Amino acid sequence: MNNKIRFAVTAATFLVLAGCHKDPLNHLSDSESMVYITNRDSTANFASYKTYRIADSADVVENGQLAGRARGAFEMALINALDSALQQRGYTRVDSAAQPDLAVTLTELTDINTGFIDYTNYWDAYNGYWDPYYWGDPGYGYYSPYAFGTYSVQTNSLETDMLDLKNAAANGDRITSVWSGLSTGALVFDPGYAATQVQQLLAQSPYIKSTL
Image 1 (spheres, helix red, strand yellow):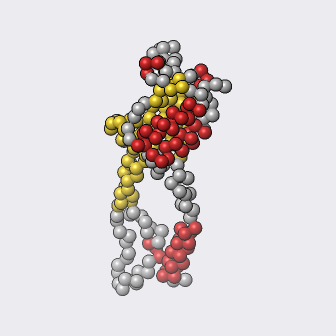
Image 2 (spheres, helix red, strand yellow):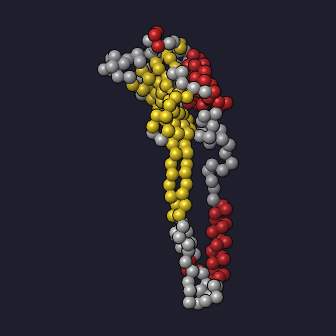
Image 3 (spheres, rainbow, N blue to C red):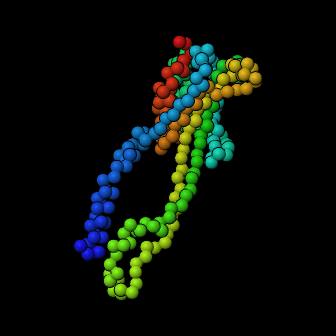
């Protein structure tokens, strides 16, 4: 088998294998690709908390830096969904003057990561198969081009935290987090998907209820 034929067979095999590669995110809808993560303080007794307050807006953090606060359609839909869900779990919403047991805070996180791709060795697996006579002059070989590319990936996430105000004095005047929920994906800041995010996060947290 000469070099030209060997290259054709090898390239065809590569294309077949590439065509058979399964992309785990392929064919998933935006809602199916959403990810939800929850974490809690295992020592917290959620039945001991009776009241809560919710922040009236969300902190906006971009690449680790506070960029401001947001109070738009998404934030209001999220606050309403959290309010309804927590009341269904037996909690009562109060204002700050009533000294609530829990504080619920919202943080919108946006991270943009940029990197570089080195295409220098892209053809290395096939360089040995190029026929030296293909270019019409046996005195010259073939070299793959040197090239670099860049990419930028933006990740949007929503973090919801429950802070223990009730036991702050007993904890040395420290306010600690007893629960955190993180949702990330294409629909994370979609007002129409705010209630679904709350439902998914609390479905992972059945222990959040004011009565046992």
